[in-house]
Image (cartoon, rainbow, N blue to C red):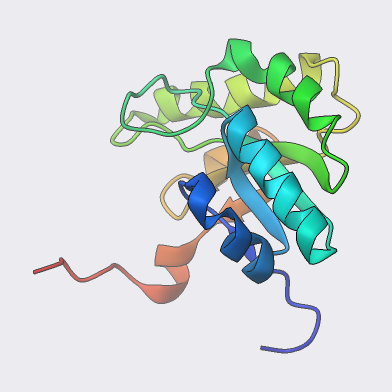
Length: 160
């Protein structure tokens, strides 16, 4: 890849994999607990680096999805202020799997409103939401980052 490419980690991250994530990625888009936040900060300190993170919020309420509940955002953002080697710069969500366009739009609008109404709104410059099948709705709701892997790489083959 050419110089200047930024690598983003998207997906569940176990705290025991935090060191490797800090080594490999410029931005980690799936911070969903104070424990993970503290572990990432400690790894950054040990490695002498600074990383950007996004807080993952479960706006759809689906039990199968990662992320904090919307009402936990302020607490996790407050904890992020104590992380000397991390910059919490935005929020990330994944739309409801198999949801209608209206349900997807509501989920993305919820994240936008959450960021806008947060005490940390000025800090939350990025909204990462939308994938190949729903990125248009995400952009309409203010996404600054979209994830279009299937649109670029095609569908995955079923695992055997």
